[in-house]
Length: 414
View 1 (cartoon, rainbow, N blue to C red):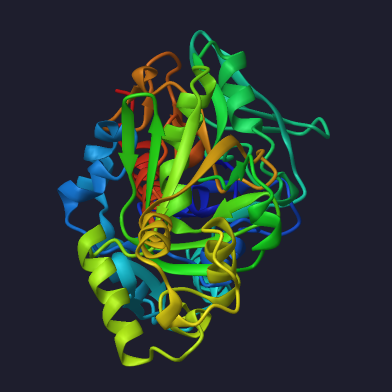
View 2: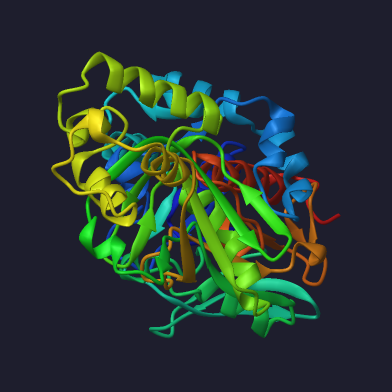
């Protein structure tokens, strides 16, 4: 018997993979329904994976990314796309290689996965929390549920997620269970998190989006530049794909006590000189227009209002009245509006969890524990975290697939 703890993408894929070899599989989920967090991913559209090459997948993860090499060899992004296509759900590729179902609905993904569970006759226990993994002589014997029920098993896969989006049931149960069995736990931190800024500007710009911008984060002499993408101002800071993907490094700097600043370059494809030449050209074409009307071609009106204010330029100034100094001040802000970072948002609003069960105590070829025979891990329970753009879901599916395959193998743990 194989028991899988957690009915998210990693757990469901582990169950499907394990059951494909005619194994008896039970999937245990603490919520009433599977995949509550999955339904929220990609803004409800489900950014399944990323179309980048196999080696590039590794580079989109933090320092533990190389641990995933075998999982990606077993089940990579192309395998995942084929898995869904073979069961009737086609996908499409969008900006920066992000892959979505053609339905634009996360519910389509979850529905297909649930149908596969039924097809493979996988036993499911919902509204069931696991209190303890039963181990005797360093080998798995089953799980003890909170209601006192014991489910006997010689293989257990822990895929209960991390701490992000606690409202979906992600309360770190799997990490706690692993810790009780002696596994080292890397301290948990919010990942892919929006940033709070030391400024009143975000509140005034709340809801404003900037597309195709670049962020440059600085802490002393250290610097991290984001890829080109979109950001959105929140009440206290900024969010959006390029913000989220840089947030882990920013969080590390802040935890080290470093002061972190951010520069927003809204014209990343042009250097300052070329940006100034473009502004001069726009002004010469419409010199009698108000400067605000010209700047709205560069950025949203509410944002350009702020730029004029910071440049001490009157809001009603005509384009042909702009002085050389005012123009250069504007260019400096267009190429690098500087703001100070206070912190990342909490686990309640973070997309993923950084930290978890140390991968040094997990066999990357099987996802099996090096400490307890018959124990396996998958997904966010482990200390793995990737960039925004479908990478974390791919890791969940890949590690789930490999854990299920390994646990279900007739030669497992021999």
